Length: 134
Image 1 (cartoon, rainbow, N blue to C red):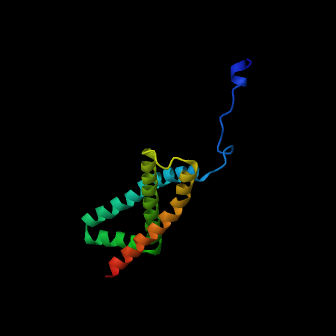
Image 2: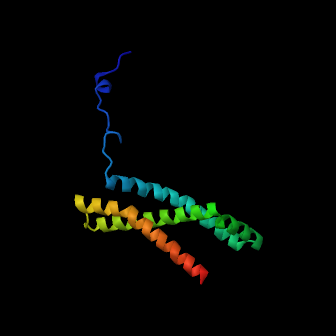
Image 3: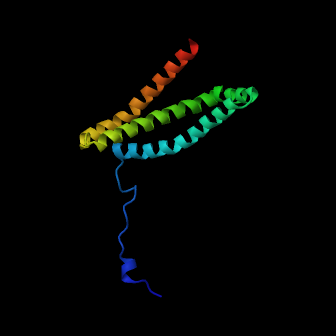
């Protein structure tokens, strides 16, 4: 059985290998990834809340896990994911108003996103550590 002309001459769709990665595209991809990562972070929060509502021993166990160096790294990562995703949402909200849609403006905003999110994450942790120590 031979293939018809329509199936042989079909054009291929462009792939990610065809497109040059630009900051706005990368921030869009990272925004989707952070959205998925938030799902797992909320699970950690739910586990902590269930432990807090449970026995003191169970809560102490979860606190020990979250207070370990690995737990703190995961919580720091979750904080960054939360801040980055929030900033991406604010960026999209601003763009929905019609502001910042120009190529230069959107590229500058996309380049600033990782920098601002890292600075804000560190600031959140500094404030949290200072509040805990007080």
